[in-house]
Length: 320
Image (cartoon, rainbow, N blue to C red; front, top):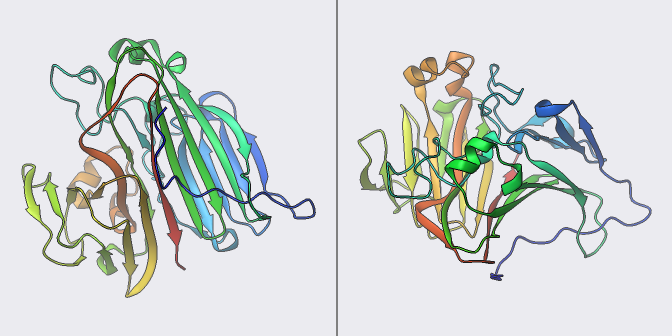
């Protein structure tokens, strides 16, 4: 097992007299979801299909921070459009041939597999009734026959979703449980809910190289310290030196997205034509109310030898 420095910070255990978060499992089969609610009203919902976070409410439960399409499919028949889908073990279309992921669909199988709810937990430390951690697992035995055939490698994923009053932390732990090494990519495809894309600025990516998929995957360097979205954007910012990417709306801080042990960030908005072309993107003009700031390890490949572990994730802070 490989230990790494700067692991995501531990949560505090609630004291005996503190009110505790409520955790419920609702629905059945592929529609099952886990809902956690803090005593102060903040909540998070995680669909077991894909371990997809479909809702995160802060500000006492009054403010929804994630965008979810009105036509998002939540019955386990396809990946969810919106929320926080988990991309693993390949980002985007896989290599055409000669790679372990070549037979997989775009974005891999994690977002289209049913995960196991491992339970709620707290960590050592001082008393804190204002946070709860939910753990989800996906293992080789839990894959569909099709996915197992396409990627016949032994692995284990543990996905931890931690709800606090003003933040949501999502961390993936990847373990090689087989005899041979494997390579993978990983991304958290976060859809942030905003009021108006024309009033949004993205900060923290200045002087960073990016691959622009709208411009035939050519490489550019971000010259402006503040990015505005005025058309379709699909960029992979790589090897970012600082940890935080900030979303500012109408001149006021809205979100801080803090990467942990991840070097890349994808910025995505489909804009008018692509939004209309996606059957599960609704309403058509909802591109105005969302922006994807997606942390990951997607430039090149992460390699794990037998028994090794990789861990990385994000903390999103709601600044309202």
